[in-house]
Amino acid sequence: MTTTDAAVPRVGSALPAPGSGVPLKPPKARWLRITGTVGPLGIAVAVLWLSIIVLLPLAALTVASFDDGLSGFWDAVTAPVALASLRVTIFVSLVVAVINVVMGTLIAWILVRDEFPGKRIVNALIDLPFALPTIVASIVLLSLYGPESPIDIQLNATQPGLIVALAFVTLPFVVRSVQPVLIEADREVEEAAASLGADNWTTFRTIVLPALAPSVLSGAGLAFARAIGEYGSVVLIGGNIPRKTQMAPQYIQQQIEIDRPVNAAAVSVALLLISFATLLVLRLVAERSLRKQEQAP
Amino acid sequence: MRRRSRYFATAVAVIGAVTLTACSGGSSDTVGGDTGSGDGTGGTINLFAYAVPKPGFGKIIPAFEATDAGKNVKIQDSYGASGDQSRKVKDGAEADVVNFSVEPDITRLVDAGLVDANWNADANKGIPFGSVVTIVVRQGNPKNIQTWDDLLKPGVEVVTPNPFSSGSAKWNLLAPYADKSEGGKNPQAGLDYLSQLVGNHVNVQPKSGREATETFLQGTGDVLLSYENEALFAERNGDPVEHVTPATTFKIENPVAVVKISKNLTKATAFKDFLFTKDGQKLWAEAGFRPVDPEVAKEFAADFPAPAKLWTIADLGGWKQVDNELFSKDTGSIAKIYDAATK
Image: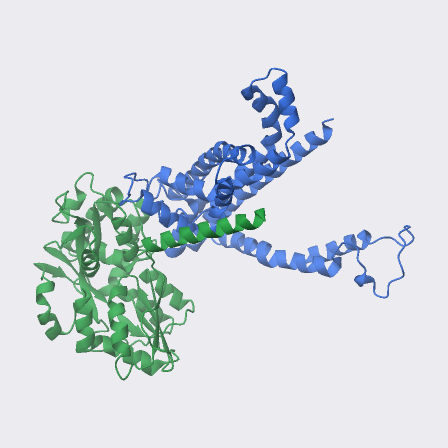
């Protein structure tokens, strides 16, 4: 818990220094003063909470994955079926992210720029995949694309089936990150471009897209990260066929069921690293675009 | 106002979607919940069973609660892959009665000091019901599967669960193994058959017999290896499948035991004993399980045709030997075949 102690002095420095010109009556109890911060106690609680909920389990997981030593970890991650499940997971999640970039931007565009009857209902529907338990999504998709498909399309136990399921649960990410940016976007610039003779495509490519790109990317990144860890929505429709449609989370579950906890932990750590990398890239991209915006006149 | 109507629309959409999906229903291996109506004043019995006998216990539990011994007893039942359930109980899940697919899953609890070493000392050796290994095929048997050799025909995909979690899987693999090795006399012939079967014809690894059935019913594979009772259950449900019991197959014996540290030992024992009564045996038979009581078995003989040759676990030297030689993790011959094929 050294982090807790390290965090304390910083709070002290956030308090207004004596004689800094802020007219304040001398308070009876310093900690009661409204400073806009939560004080050392608040920070300590937050750090403790984060440690218990996030850091400790992750540390335990990492330790568990090395129960059989470094070679055991490496063997577990590089077992052909484990590698195949990671490959399937990443491939399918990338495809889903790309689909989301196109469809999500399109949907956001329509919701912001076009008027049509029932628009509000459509807008509300976008959040449905967030609210719906993912296993429900899986059942819905199975009854639609399963062996008794009413429209005679069978996608169960295929990679397209996985992609459909994941596209369903990740639908809101790009839409909801692009929407506010589009609402804020300055339409006068687009009109100016049009009046100077630019066609729609040129305007979109040179004016709108650069403004939207960071939000599209962050939406896609979140969708990708979500797809990597998705379990409920693919558990029924995916078929869980090793080397073909078995996603890494399903592989992990299977290893637990057959009493191979080290394999499960090792692949979990691999998934964790991928998620970390995704988030890191997202941050870097976000920071870069922020800097660009600041540099712009 | 706008916000509110948006929330309203979301709510309507969610309710609509949930209602729609509630109709289609799903499958589950885990907690069975309240099958019976006991209010618990007579105590609660936690039943941990393997995945497949759920329809049987669905009949047994209300019948037990109707007896004097079972009055007001609440039975909390839970189903899952046999090995998985057994490990859960060993790791501290509170169980009073356990019913597993294979004996080693109970032996694990004996070793952990949870089940009395004499659990199988009674006349029925702790086995209230059983079944035989059978081959389930699609309606009309399009690939014309009749024998164990037919499973190795090119292009035949076989669904059978993973033997590291499922008891059903062990029985399924032992049936052709016993046939090919002539009851263990020629182990290599049996193992050769299994490496071909597992290496070339098995692609999925469901965790339990129940999940294997679900996978098969959802369209994966041409053949499902399963318990006869599971096949009967699916057929009676109207699922488009039929079963072919090969002339030579294997006798499945599913043991039951009382956990000796049970808080409700008398009731738990009464429940276990009820499974062996004439009434209990009839209910098992009606649910598609082969009863052990000779009289009840005679009564239902027409439902359970006797195969030409039925190998038993005793023919192979008993579970202890079979588990050691064939299924033991990393060293058993079948475990090695499975690991090589699925790694």
